[in-house]
Image (cartoon, rainbow, N blue to C red; front, top):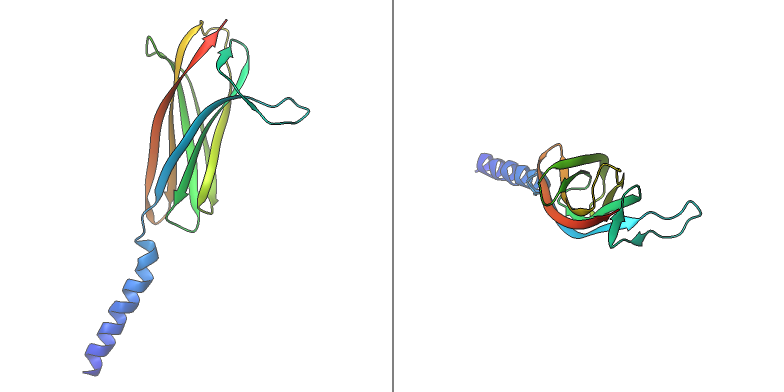
Length: 148
């Protein structure tokens, strides 16, 4: 009887210890924006309706992560011509583990002179990772105009 009680306690303690490690990471995307960065004098970035060739723009994806006490994140932004599908540029960044919650990841891009006016697309991927849990990602697209 005593051995079966000890076995039950060991199984219960093992399950309790494994509980947090068995949780799953989650990532829920929010808004995607194209912004004109704030001037060097400060202030907030302003939303942009179209990009100008030669102009600098910040592309931003909001999301919320959960599932662990510390979660590493990162993003990949791929820019392409929406009509031809030609890949124009790729920006990627990774961030060290931080607490779960809402975040915004962004990268700046100066629109090259080689881009002709037209419709372009950003394909974005944000990911969350943890050493003991399966990584997760969210993807999406947004189109924007480039003017001369």
